[in-house]
Amino acid sequence: ETGVTQSPTHLIKTRGQQVTLRCSSQSGHNTVSWYQQALGQGPQFIFQYYREEENGRGNFPPRFSGLQFPNYSSELNVNALELDDSALYLCASRRSGRTEAFFGQGTRLTVV
Amino acid sequence: SQQGEEDPQALSIQEGENATMNCSYKTSINNLQWYRQNSGRGLVHLILIRSNEREKHSGRLRVTLDTSKKSSSLLITASRAADTASYFCATALMSGGFKTIFGAGTRLFVKA
Image (cartoon, rainbow over the protein chains, first blue to last red):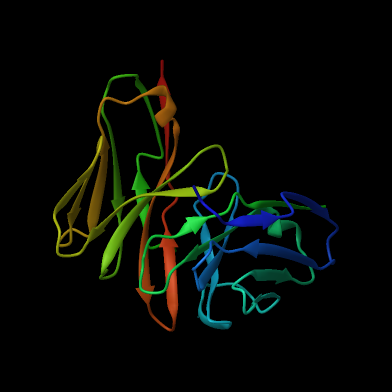
């Protein structure tokens, strides 16, 4: 049973606004990744954090930023929201050196 | 473009039949993973196969890997209605930092 929790579960924002999504990693996991999943598509890798530093990034603009905290919880921040940012945002945590990732249930963001 | 591409995009079978999904990727890999997603929720890790393995089993799942063709297949035997879900392959890359790349997925519908 995954211990990764995300909040909120659903969110509606207006174009141009900013949003912060939160993820609480599974106990003992020091690596967290964030993904954007549009309807009917596969998850797109946004970035990964290891020990509070970003160590990998996908093809997303700088207005997508993140933080990882000492307790390994993390945030995804998106500025200047666009309609195309509407998607399911997933976080996944894992132990460093392990490949298996445990996913949260996601935050459904709708930008209107 | 995505590293992994699955086919078919959608598959509808009767309960008890076998389901085969294929994944192709573009660059060299250390391992390939398969994940399952129910109704736009979080992903669940199913199985990992390393680049030096050709076949791996886990319960009703059988995964093959052909590194010469850069392809993998996932076979679900004796399918059940509860297997209805989307299935994704994923590869991890170390190129300008760490990245995990998912394919677009195969949507499997198992009819009772």
